[in-house]
Figure (cartoon, rainbow, N blue to C red):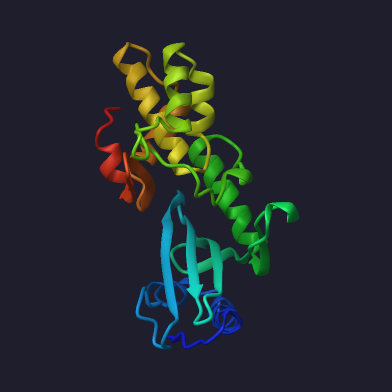
Length: 249
């Protein structure tokens, strides 16, 4: 196992570059999982890291987003994001490792700078085929690696209805299965869960999902991994099955 022993964000880059160059997720995941969460060995330095999610994307493939913040002794802060698609729990199909560049609003705001990336066209084509065979739709690549959507009914101390819930409620109110199906066939799990919720409510009204939608529903119901979930002030990473167990199809 590789050990992280860095006194600067440049060393973090080198360590990640080294482990990611193996393109072996059985090496990358333990490396990420064993990064120190607090009490960083060098006095005054701390690393906070976590998987936003690591979950099924399509049969034979997983999608993951890993976040890392490094706080140096001089109060300098560096934020990194790793996005990855894994084939058969082992071989990496693609990854990007980004560094968040903190800028003032006058400079256009913060942005991610890609430090290094990799993709395997053969594996990514296999992913597209797997997704198409399962969902009957083309993989919408723009919906990969989204970590800004939470599934829930109310978020924050004010209990504000999240955007996804508001959209789903609107579509259910007018029996709009077209837009619900679009979210159901998205690779983003949180959108899929809102769509499941919507179709579950319509089913109670006597409106059954189409065959294509039902095929997708049966796969999503048993996906492994976590979803971003919110309930008032509680934001968590909830197992997908814990959420889908409440749906009846």
